[in-house]
Length: 322
Image (tube, rainbow, N blue to C red; front, side):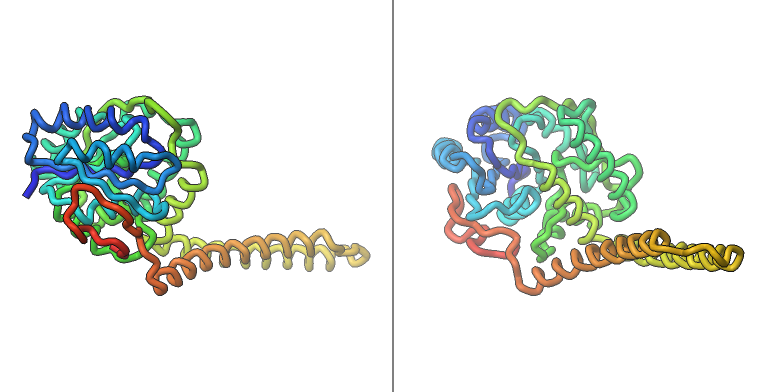
């Protein structure tokens, strides 16, 4: 069995890949030896010709594996495709834009060898836009409630975990993957640790994570691992009913004390808008859950593999849910 598998989803980074692979080679060969690790690049049907770069590099790098997805599946689903063929005792996931430094991988391995099941890399100063940093903080607060995440644990796409956690994550069959939730629920919080590293600026191109994709990922976390949103809607409905009752009592009391007062449309419209807004909120949350149930029942695949390089025939599957 290999000591390490590095799984990297690739999207819009054709110009960065040669430099990324060069840095991985400089770090991992002296640390582990050429025959003790593999790097799995999962091309997530990006807008550039990154797959051609992966195929070319694979002809000279025997430790490089390549998977080309037929359609864009998203970062976490693409990682699941990589986990399907990962053979290392330890698995590291990282981004393809060199904001995550390959030189930090040995430190992740040290943490896992010292007994941790899961190790996250926390960054000193993230080179992200303001809205991304604010979104990360909000996601961190919500994850602490919904996933029972240990206090102070920073969830990062630069992470390492033991093979057993990867196998547990692979048991998830649904199309909406939130990898951190799968990993955290598979081990004791005391076996989760973090290391601190420097976050680097993206060396080329733009991030593939737009605001809409970030919101979609947040919804996957919120609705796939918790029923808290449904409970929130129930409590909001109870609160709205109570407020509506108080408003009705106030209007009735005002009419009794001022018989000539015309109780007109303002109070009626306020009540209708208040209750209607809560009803739409409730329908939206219920619809989100119902839609995910429908797609699970219809066996929507997590990803669909097209081409592969440096893999045995059939390894990893070609059209599979997991």
